Image (cartoon, rainbow, N blue to C red; front, top):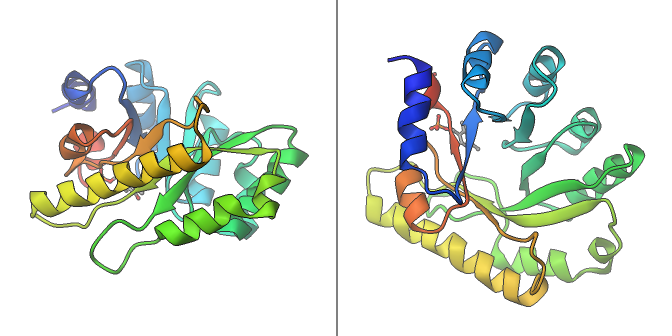
Length: 220
Ligand SMILES: *Cc1c(COP(=O)(O)O)cnc(C)c1O
C-alpha cells in the first residue's frame, strides 16, 4: 500500500473538525514530500535535531508540530518556526518558550500535556499541577505564548475500555480548564489525542487533533 492511499483512508475516517498531524519521526524527507504532494501540510516530530534537519530542506509552508518531550535548552532552536508545541509539562518550560518566542517576535501556541495513562511511564501534568501553573503570576505575565488546549497519551494496551476511559478523562480536564481559565477564549479549543492504534477511539471522545505515524508511513 502506498502512503498516499494510507493518507486517503485515514482522511476518510476523520470528521471535519479533526486535524491530522502526520508523525514523520525516523522517516526520510522523500516520504514526507510524498504526503506533502498529496496535500498534507502538518507534520509532527518528537526530536529537536530531526525537526531542524527536515525543516531546513523541506517546503517552507509545512507546519511543524513538536510532539515529544522538549528540553528547555533546545527551545531556542525551534522557536523561529514551530507551529505548535504539544508537550508542555512545566512552568519552567513554558517560561523558556515565552522568552524565545519574544526574541523571535512571535507568539508560540502550546498545549499542556497531561498524564492520563493509568500506567506510570509517561510525561505530563496532573490536574493540580496544571491549575497551579495557570493560576500563578509568572504565567499571567507571559505575553509570547498562548495555551490553545491539552494533549495526552493513553496507555499502550489492547484494553479499549481503558483507552476510552483515559481519553474521557482528558476531555473532562479540557472542559474544566476551559471553564476555569479560558471561558470565552475561542483559541482554547484543541484536544490532541489519538495515535495509530487508538485514534478512532480518540475521535469518539472528542479529539481535535490526531497524531498518526505508523498507520501512515508504515511501522518504524
Ligand atoms: C510517535 C508518536 C506518535 C505516533 O505514533 P504511531 O503509533 O506511530 O501513530 C504520536 N504521538 C507521540 C507523542 C509520538 O511520540
